[in-house]
Image (cartoon, rainbow, N blue to C red; front, side):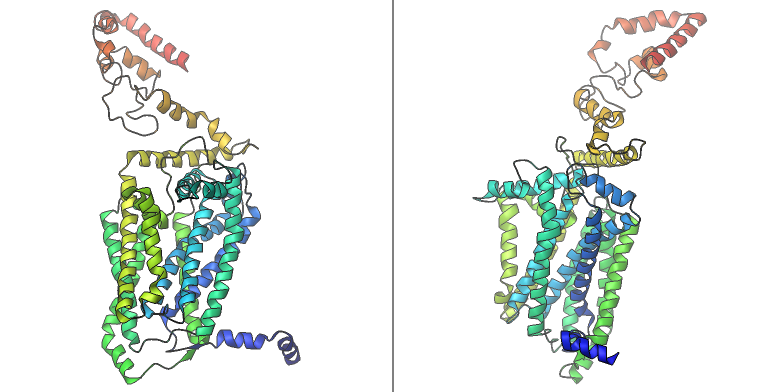
Length: 551
């Protein structure tokens, strides 16, 4: 066996690779603050594995994309779990990247000679955000389609090249099949390749420059890291309490859990503050250690915790699949994913050019220049304050966006209608005829239960109401001018219109001009009320007959 290993090492040099990988020197010893890079690598590996398996079932076509995702989620064994892990891990990657960025800035790991590695890390964050944006469209549902429409319309406003850039991204003048195939090519090909390339460069420079040595006062550095995260999360928790009824439950749970972890860590560091400072004062610098086994054990525990959190969110919240995309029907609740909601709020707060380009551009520019700004102690302090301000602004505008949405009746109605359509199309897809070759959207377009309320809202709701709303759930704000058609032509409704008291009620003709000098009302009050018992019985039979005739 030794001969085989020696032969393999002679041909591949694997022992040197293993030694450099596992026995890398860690200045100052293993630390929990060093786990973020490994958790990110783990998350990316999970995304690649789950993404490739999903690719095996996915069909990037305007008539089969939603259908293939439906098949994955409802027919493939373990498909819902697989898609859930892929979806929620992408959310966690954003959080892990931000935590890693905070750690890098606090430790000063962006300073010379590590500028390029810092910039590569920013590139990884940008690619991850782009992967989220392109992946949002791939289910080809209403939510993803119209959110992508918002994004491509912003692209169209890029100075000088906006129209050409949008046409390149969309694949034509309007979003359609070619938009889906281009986003899929970006999501499954171009962006992952760029991500792998940046990771290779990032690791190469990381190996070249080594781990940033732990600060002399490492206990103080740890407290600064956790205090910064804790203060930002306290602000997020306060905003959450202020907006608790508007924020998605999964976001509320995530913010509360992270805040709790930060609180426990801060309390632990404060309790052991004196002991840790005494340890630091006794040793000029803690002894170095190797990646194996101490740091890799911490990394493995952190990765297991991330996977456990992802599985909890999959189990508790699942993964939404909205109704199939319908370009002919505008979706009033089109919104991006949560990590873009702050930018969405900026678009409402400021003019398009300011909210979409100037403010994000200034923030990105300052973050890019941090290695030069942070050369001095004052500059490093500015970078810390600026990063804290950006995170606080992100939290504030994200909460503002959710609050604004749920204060909008149009938005709430559109979300409720989308949920109804999503559940309805799944019921129809499980029917005896299944999904037709034209796509699942045909099921909704030919479904009376789906189209009836929409037709009522479009053609009848200007005068009539249906159980007090417009058929789609919007309550009427103007004074009622025509009958409420809820239960129209059933026995109770026909009997009600033959009753003088009901006839004068706003739900019938009481709110119309016809009630004035109405011969019908005169007939009901004078003639119909004077009928004997036999005639009243005949009227009751007539009510049954009229209702039956109406179907």
